[in-house]
Image 1 (tube, one colour):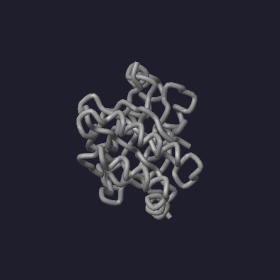
Image 2 (cartoon, chains in turn orange, yellow):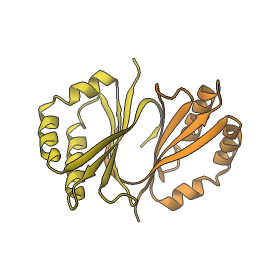
Image 3 (cartoon, helix red, strand yellow):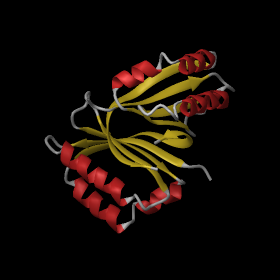
Image 4 (cartoon, chains in turn yellow, green):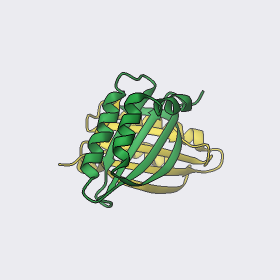
Length: 101
Length: 101
C-alpha cells in the first residue's frame, strides 16, 4: 500500500496564528508514539501572516483517517476550530522518501 | 535567523518521472552529511502523473543557496534538466517544527 502525504494550509483568525501553531505542535507531539505518523511538520510564511502550513506523511491513508478519531486529535481539533477561518488541501501526495533528520 | 522551507513541484517529460524521482532521491542522499539540510522529501501524486513534489527544510536561506553551488548538486541539476519541462515554487516557508521520524 502506498504511503499517504498531505500538504495543507490553515488560515488563523487575526492574532491567533501563534496559538494555532502551538496547538498543531501539540498535535505533532501527541503523535510522537504513533509510528504510522512519519512526518507532521508545521511552518508559517512571511507572505501570508495568518497562514500555517502542515506537511504530513503517513504509513497509509487508513492510518491518517484513523488518527482523526483519536481522543487527543479530536480534543485538539475542537480547540483549534475556534481559531481557524479557513483550510486548504494544497497537495495530496504519495511520499517516496528522501532525507529526514 | 529563521529556518528556510520550500514546497515545490517539478514536471517531468512523459516517461521520465521515475528517472527524475531517482535523481532527486540521489540528491537527498548526497545531502545526508549536510547538517544544514534537515528535510529533503520527495513525493509523487496520483492526480498529476508527471509531477514530483519536494518538501525542503534548511537551517537558513543561505545554507539552501550555498547548496546549489555544491559540485554534487550542480551535477544532478545538469542531469535532471534534460527531463524537466516545468518547475513551480508552491510555498516559501518558515519551518517551526513538529514530528519528523
